Image (cartoon, rainbow, N blue to C red; front, side, top):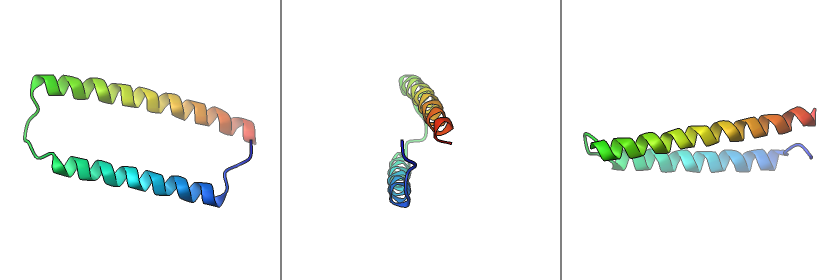
Length: 69
């Protein structure tokens, strides 16, 4: 597998910036002070799944980089 070139890196950075802009905008739109119990539970489950998948993807990408060198 070939190493990513500058164009690939630039594209990935642009996508990451767009995602961050989206998340910040979404956060700024939500102005209610408190979440109810059901909303808290939902957020907890969702964030747990998000970080679990993020960890798995990081391990997979780390494994790919180890084989490139």
